[in-house]
Length: 227
Ligand code: CA
Image 1 (tube, rainbow, N blue to C red):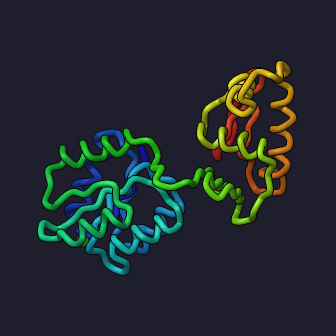
Image 2: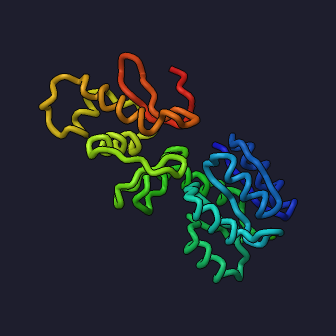
């Protein structure tokens, strides 16, 4: 898994990086909050390990900033022993867990494993893939910040795809979830609606999100289709 460590104390940073690398993770280390922010924006990390006392921008401000940008990467805060307020503020600002310094490395590793086991954070009504967002409460859909009007059926289809990112859904599965009953024995209706959806959410945008898996079905993914 790809992990970002934001820690200005060289000794701690090196010790954490080495341990995580030995556990098989790919680790980037940065030394201040501003670099942390730009790395977190540039790379889709699986976990961020974030110190609070940092130069340039402190960890809590960095955390609020990435959560404001709807970055849902699990964050493990590193806090001082007497930093009760920091821990409370940190958890309220969207941290998933914290660890008090000094800590034993096996505990850090266990907390990282626990964070990696969690399903993606679903604290709100927003489903996302890359720059595509669907709000299940307001029923708004946006791509690259631009509002996209969908019919109710197109909306349901997109919601289904977004709830199963990177997973191939067969035409039959899609029919069962979007059309509710087997009225349409002809699964071609799925291809027709996928076509409508593509024209609205993919055409004219830089990258393709809906991928056809020949002979199987469809997959929504921000990654390039290797099929
Ligand atoms: Ca520090």
